[in-house]
Image 1 (tube, rainbow, N blue to C red):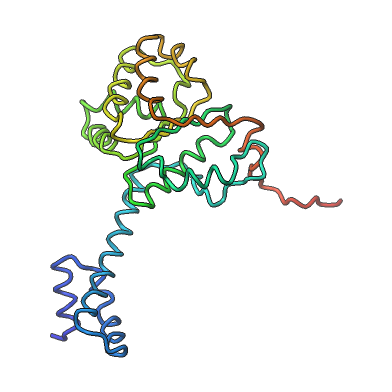
Image 2 (spheres, rainbow, N blue to C red):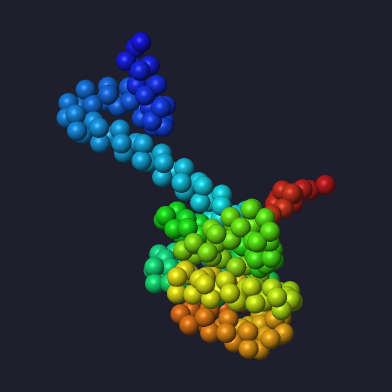
Length: 254
């Protein structure tokens, strides 16, 4: 058996695919550069670790269930209601996440709340955090089904172990008393252990109308707003100002 075939077989057995793929190339490079055996070993291990980190990031991104638009590098600062560059830059540094701060993005529909929240969620994933994106509707479904199905139970476990949970469109639709209590229990469990990003088109004072329970609303707000930055977005719809078209921008002359 050739030495390369033997190494490949050993790597498969030890589940080291990156080393199997790059061992020969790295060996030739090591011979050319006259590096030590330990440096050669370090190069192989670094390659394997790099692949595993990329796979882990891909797994976290898949589990996060991000919407289609989340790349904040493409954020349009020329829009009427756009966030200031310095403000968005500070948010993307994620210092607030390290300090377990919450963010509430508040404003009318279409002003970029979901896009910013999803973008910050991706930035967190990219830096190694466990971050998840849920609409209020999907989150309530998980809370309802967590004791009934394995899928929901697994989703709930991921959420409760998160460093960051994004809750999109909170309090948009009325919820039952039972669902409101389950939601409070989740917020209480995450309090001071994880950060929240909440998007909403209602002010916190209006949440009581959705939950139909002033006491429960106060308890939720107490935990959400304890360490929190409220960012108000206004103006024309970010979506409409950045809408796609199927037609050429140039007017055709007839």
